[in-house]
Image: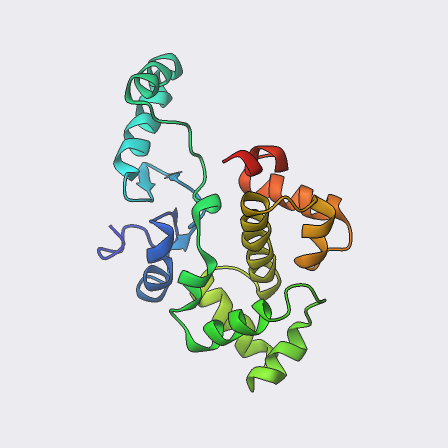
Length: 198
């Protein structure tokens, strides 16, 4: 549909790991790589390798939420409204050398305050170039990308260590554990306790 221009000016989704290529090839499409399903006008798009299942359930749910719930239970398919918890920031970053360098720079400083102007200077690009590169490759701002990397690391530490949330917060650059707790809840829809048990 994007190739035919049908999605121009419309919001759509695709699988998250294809987003940088999709954005470059179809710049007129308003890509939402975090959504599993996007309904826009009379068009429904789906992301992920099994997006057809999410799409089918979404279409059934429009007519009958009860039937959709029963089908989901039979198929053992959980409600997954967002791809965001599954996105691997470093995989997206590799599509652009500036963003890949920015990712390495940030990972080396996760516990420190991150300055976007300082990062741009260190990488030998303008702040505007860095912002455009991150937006084009990852679909977000440099600050949001830094948050994504911090959240990714925090989740890893939650699942692989017994460190307190306060200690993990400091390791990923947040002085207050509550800031990290709020971000984790917003991005994953799960509590820190639930993330530890996954």
